[in-house]
Length: 318
Ligand SMILES: Cc1cc2nc3c(=O)[nH]c(=O)nc-3n(C[C@H](O)[C@H](O)[C@H](O)COP(=O)(O)OP(=O)(O)OC[C@H]3O[C@@H](n4cnc5c(N)ncnc54)[C@H](O)[C@@H]3O)c2cc1C
Image 1 (cartoon, rainbow, N blue to C red):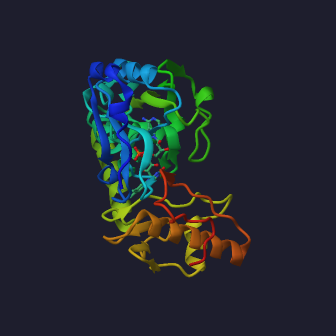
Image 2 (tube, rainbow, N blue to C red):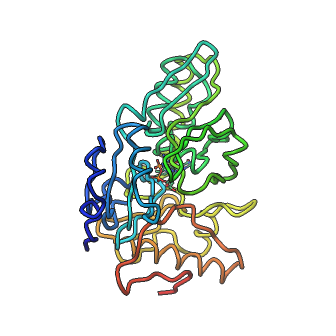
């Protein structure tokens, strides 16, 4: 499956882009599930100015999708039309802490590395990130959280770029964080977060992180090709319990499986297509609704197109 070469059509201005631009670029390996088709055009900006130049020049009718570390993401088999942007490199992963424990961190920084760095520097408040395998950008978008803590708790604000290439300094109110959600327009790209940390003891923080890691290892399929929590927890309920009670523990469909260890995680057993995974998710939603009347909502973000003739309809039963 290949898209029309967008780079050829965009014209000379792309010659001044300093980051990497690649047509029909395979992004499956940038996701935990390791499935899905290519990005029509993939862009790795060199820095914020480069990203802004690109977005200002890119015709506004071309869609832009941002990905982080792909740990809550399913790329469909037909690939992603338009441009897929992934921040990386020094320009987007620097970290600074001032004397008042005001922390600034780039959006490409992996949460786990951030937690470790804060612990080493004796800055408390971020140990929960040791269990979350995404980036700070993904954490801002999803209000990632665990172990009773969440991204919004210590957040002072974030920088984000809109589709026209303009920078916005967003306050916590602007971000409108809720349970695994954020009200910032879907095409804004986060470039930096600011948090309020506090003094902590490096040894105690390391012990806290070790506990988080041990809990994960014990309770989640952390070594599998997965997409994290598949469904959001309905009010006052656990999605895993509904999936379990519907009889799906260990259930397989094509190359996709419901994790025997944690039923809110779907797994690619090696040869799953994105279609297998999405179809299994929809089958679970249908069964749970039939049995309980409760509608599960996807937490995993599904992006891109289906292969021709391979649409997965919501609640499909086979
Ligand atoms: C084993 C495992 C355990 C997990 N445990 C938890 C957990 O305990 N708690 C939890 O909350 N999550 C958990 N997750 C899910 C996931 O790690 C988080 O949702 C994480 O915040 C996603 O970040 P990411 O960089 O991987 O984003 P992606 O998965 O790449 O993308 C997720 C969303 O964020 C958007 N996004 C990413 N970067 C940016 C950016 N720079 N600007 C704008 N939008 C952006 C994408 O467009 C997409 O909508 C787990 C996942 C796995 C695989």
